[in-house]
Image 1 (cartoon, rainbow, N blue to C red):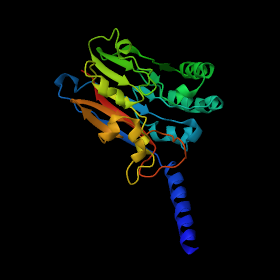
Image 2: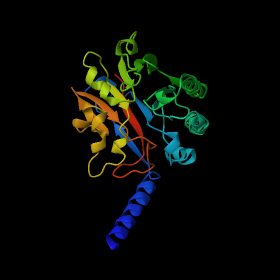
Image 3: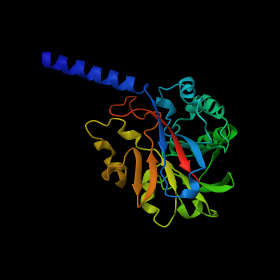
Image 4: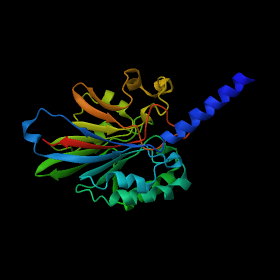
Length: 271
């Protein structure tokens, strides 16, 4: 009886602390290193947010903007998994509104994740429309060029890999000479990109394990990168850097252990 009570108390404490952790988000700044002398004086400050999961998000729009409104933001990148229920779409709008107040010089962009594709076709179209109406250009195997102090930056949006929506050939079609910034949800796509050049890639998908204790064994079914111990943070593959965000929201149960909700600002040199 006493053992059962102790186990119950420990479980309740575990759940309580796990829920508290979902409110304790961090803002990380990442300086991307480069060997190019020509890029040292030109850089992009990119705000990256992934895996908002509006159904299970503990960070309010007000707290989100408070942490970043003093930062200079040149570009905003949202890398998918906004929601998976039609009724959640209105709850996304306040977040989009506060982010647009940052007035990114070179615009705001979004790609979709596996949870977004749970929506039926009509609801997915509504989600896409809401993003575009609030100033977030959606990229589904598309690219767009911007000029940063006279230098070309290709923003390449690769659609979600794990749901077989990605098309690398289409995504890179028409890419011009310059710096290639890739936005995608599932980072496993980097393993298929040997013939496709990128200077930096932003992604999410793994939530940093979400429950990363003692190890995120439950992620093993989510692709080869997990087996390579690449589930969060900055990594190099064949000399090319990519970043896996821990995400802002949660999926399944609204708790985190060994991980924190994350917002990142990336200082990316432009060549």
